[in-house]
Image (cartoon, rainbow, N blue to C red; front, side, top):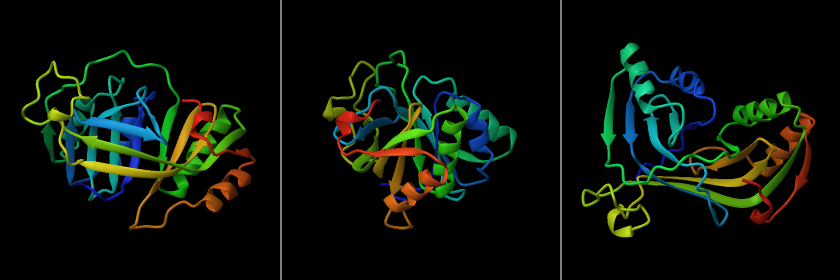
Length: 222
């Protein structure tokens, strides 16, 4: 299982962000296609936002998540890497998840570093959003699995007999910062300094964000 927590770029509503993310990748690239993403915020399963294709580059300290059925396609990334003569390997699994029209949802930002938190706040402030709710104790996780070779296209992914027992990757988060336009989830890692609640509250205060502390995940608007 991949355990290293890299700098995460989640490509969602703005497909141009894919190319901004790819500019940070220089080598050591793995592309995984048709992964099964289980995304839990607190005890809630997030079905509106799923990521099935990822670009993983430990050497470049980058993890790019592409939203399922989003405007940015994994083929766009492959063409970019080919044009830049960046070597990559592809692991493609059979696609067993039924395609559904994506529903409008808030963006998710995943903050390992202070600069991501600041970028997210500045992005909301440009939209005239100057208040947020902060849930410091809510724990979340994103688990990536893959269908086994016994899977077929007409098999729903909630059938455990067709999904790998061992997660390919698991990303943990602690805390949720909720703006009207986005949710920010700080990652948790044993290998590096994490963003703690004091860091987050001080940053929100520095940017003039009015912050309400909350505890129940039921209050979060997805």
